[in-house]
Length: 200
Image 1 (cartoon, rainbow, N blue to C red):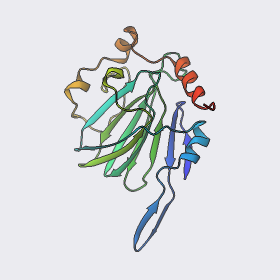
Image 2: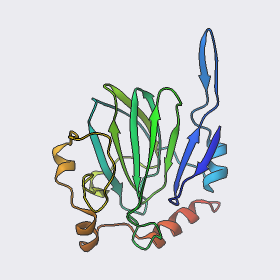
Image 3: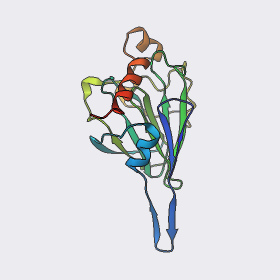
Image 4: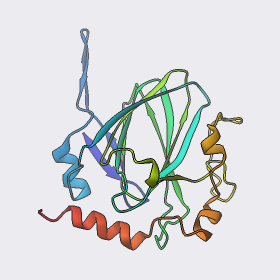
């Protein structure tokens, strides 16, 4: 398993070693010890989710209030998706930038997304299935979003007419969320994740 940091602090790409023979395939898609070594603290497992989407469905950009936020570890177990992480942390040196990683059932990559970052996914195939682990349970009062088609973000989504939920279609732009004081603060996010590395 290879775990690599991306250009956005708090985002890691995981490439598993796959072992196949005529019987089938085996791989480790998640290793708590290796992830903690790279990230600097263990991932608290509070919830596991599966999401199935038709081709062209776009979900996100979602984020949660920090603290406690919601770190995620995402992989695609069927089909393919484009996984996008947006730095929405006010004061971050990469504020407003995004990273995109293709997740599919061939390379079987995964992505780790730290607390305070925005996350979205676009299905590239029918029945695209993502499986993800979360550090905190879903709490609708703490959940927010940014419009995924915000022209200021200029995310290069691979579909021309993505299908959005009514909730995601009504999300504010990054500029509006910033003006409204809804976005996480980079210093607060960093302090929170640093605290996770200290023994309790």
